[in-house]
Image 1 (tube, helix red, strand yellow):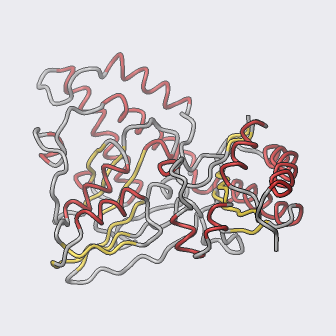
Image 2: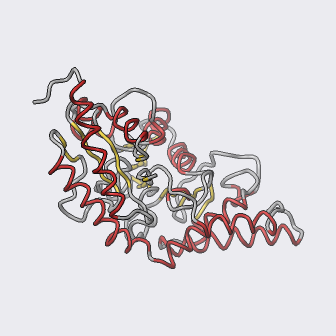
Image 3: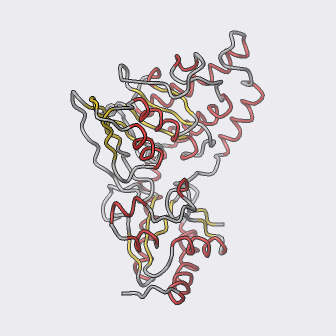
Length: 352
């Protein structure tokens, strides 16, 4: 199998699996308990908090553990209920749908702009905070791929998720700059200094820690920028050269896009059909955000970018990981031209 859906989920790292098995045996107790097993569990949680804070240029006390990016995003948006909330139209649905619920007309204002888009990998310009505004960024796709410093980025809030860097699904984090507005989404406990109620998922946090340590110790952002980017660019070049009617939705002409994401449209070929045909050949890709899969609507990201429903419907996202090689690019190009040709021949849409 050639797995090119790493922007949805990166396969669990061996070191993460090992760390989680160890945590099941050693850190099983409720981390809020006052006995020794509870203290051992809390120590592991605090170790993860420290490592993440160091990696993003924050203070440990500015990190709140959550169940993942959706909860982190909803928490920030919910904090600004009744306030002006401005989002990029290319945001994840967990931002856009929450903003529709909670948007109001009070100040201060919240800006929520992801630094790199999850479907196209392209970089967005972050707004600059002022006396009447705050800035949040969903950095889910950025962590481990690009070096991050939340202070240098001018962020008040930032979102992270473990499974995008080879950690487990179901755990993430929220950065909240000291002194910022904050309203807990989940209440009913003293965990996280009353900022997020609920028993700690210590085993998952231990896995998150192992994934962070792997990224830190191997400087994965350098590997992505050097080795993985070459694979992405090689695939882009071959698709344009060898497949008629193909066009890129990711700008690969400069270094401003994420190094592992390539979004491509194929004229007169429907994206989900391409995905299914490739899957039958053992090549795993996506048609955009996994959270929006199956809704039948064109990608809201590509609609915002191009305004063209046909381009949005005909798009496929290839997203590389650290384990991919040039042999994977070769395999894709062994089967992709034939898949596109077959679909174009049976399409009711005429190629221009």
